[in-house]
Length: 206
Image (tube, rainbow, N blue to C red; front, side):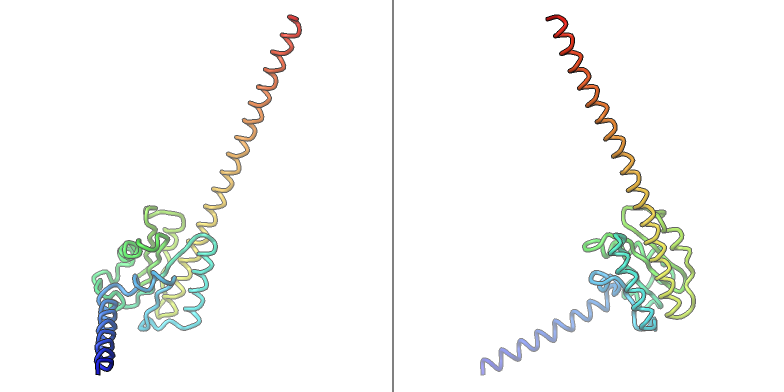
């Protein structure tokens, strides 16, 4: 009897926990919940073709491997925003909001695609970090395929801009290293010449 009662209590608690989790997910910001664990948020009502979802996911994985992580949220309607429906049709504002929601586990670039346009944010880098302006200029076409294509275009733009910045930084670093090496060699030559001169004068005096 006790065993049956314990099982009944456990089942009730599990059901309550599941209901609470589902309610919390529905009441909060769904994209923020999903993007903590993956790189792309695509709600079912966006009707994005499976192949387009796969292409966008693969692109974000390549961006991460290239050292320029990007997470993309496709928002096709206000219902995709959970409790922050007021931010629908405001992709840039939502991108900034979403970045704050993700900051406990992610600090990279965030792309938000809505039918009205593209929003891009990267915490701590202002509004005009490399590729941001060009990514915001992407105009989504109609339908789920159009939203996914805009997400891919914005991600590709940010990834290419990051690669260009990285190349420049590496080049500058190489130039600085060369300068320091030459300077060190000059100092070493001066030191050797000084020691040689001191020894030569000492011999002459002797």
